[in-house]
Image (cartoon, rainbow, N blue to C red; front, side, top):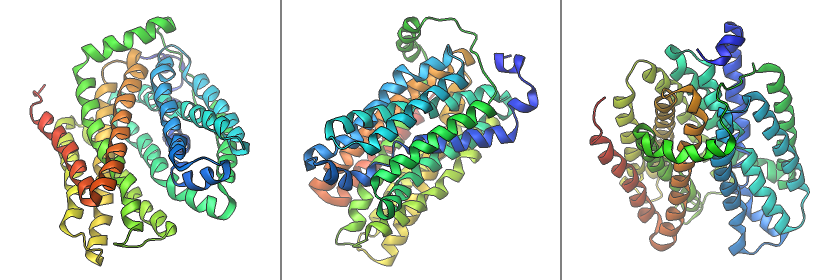
Length: 399
């Protein structure tokens, strides 16, 4: 029995209200990482960044997030979880407010990296949700929390686009700073405390991570699967706005924002995947999730004419892609969270860092392929990634 179960009322720890709060918190926190993507243009213009340097706005945020996954998220195995999350949120609130008021490009880029680091608070809350949950409903609860996180990712881009259009990009940062401050106070009051039983020193904690990665086959496989599908996810959402605003469809930025909202429906697959995982169907459900990603990215190849049918195929592809990625994420976390509560935060940090790197590679490959060979070239790379994951999956030995 975990520490939280010993010291907190059962009803409080596992109440649906707590899970709902965790889901909303994860969505609001992770959105900070994605608000900037559609705002690169106006931010660069305001701060005087060159076109070559403008990409650093997003890249440094991603680097900060990756550093946070490796060096901050593992603290969840030795530091009281609620306290850790609240501290990270207070820091994120300060840095967001500073970033919104910044007029010097170099300092703004530093703020972008720190915002990324603060945003890993969401990845402390996901294993925290697993700690709160009994084994029988752990997959469902993690799936519900991940639905909130995925909604945050999917809604962040259109919300920031529309917010910047009517209030300016700085308002997006200020509003998010206020949201993080309010969220920190809500979580401090609403969440039960969880003090990990481990007394490992921080240096030993970090040194153990390589050993965990090397000796945990489930982590290796699940990280590879999701790095592949998240690479396709990032490739698609990096290149599809370029395709939609190009000569085939000539979409406006508002229309691109509306298209991005389509993917929100895919987040509904997360709780379904969690329930399947609770029933012991992780392996077959994983095969279905990987196949959905492969099918979704192949669909647009059927019609590239810019016709109504081509647009319908893109809409279906976006929904199915997000369903497959959402389902595979929950299935993966359900699998690795079953390995032991004393290492969950480290496992989650490693898993997230690896698949996030896959997403960065997919985004970079997508941008390069689109520039070099157009939309079709990007799609073929997007197909190759889940195809490789399916080949690896087919060789997986049954437990």
